Image (cartoon, rainbow, N blue to C red; front, top):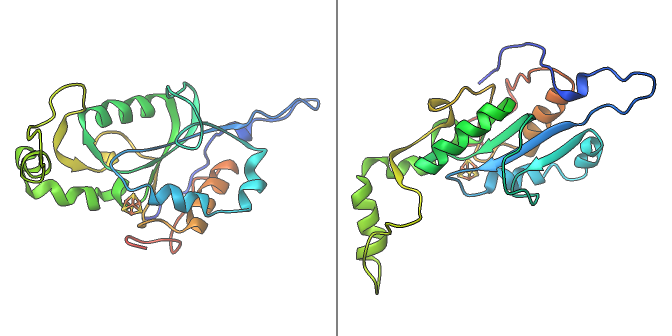
Length: 198
Ligand code: SF4
């Protein structure tokens, strides 16, 4: 899925003045209904992370200890489908606080594996998990938990997406390419670099 060619403004594109420190690009990652495999692939960029470490600040995500999604994020890289009311609230918050949103992996792009439950009613899924397969306390959870939406759905059905990065998971090379292109102020063209189910 090729993204349109256009220049993008990330913090790295700001001009250094008189030896002033160039502002680092604020990068956040998050996962929703997912298996974490896309984040594992992100970590598989291995030593290349050293090449970009001095250009970015990771300000939110499972790799850092931040409780609240911060303001003024330059690039948000998101894994997983939207499956609950809490997911929906969070992805809209992320979108409102991020300049560029990357939909990373087939679960984010198409709902993929989480959408396998879409053929069933929510009540049937809860019955299966909490009544039929429970050996004690058979009941639907009802307090202090997110409520499942009727269907697991991809990110772009809730918010605008700037970069679609398919794959299950996307190859580390493709993830690194996206980050490197965005750091260079370009919108990545992923033609030939990944595919659904890759
Ligand atoms: S796209 Fe594949 S690797 Fe990524 S979260 Fe979904 S199932 Fe896991």
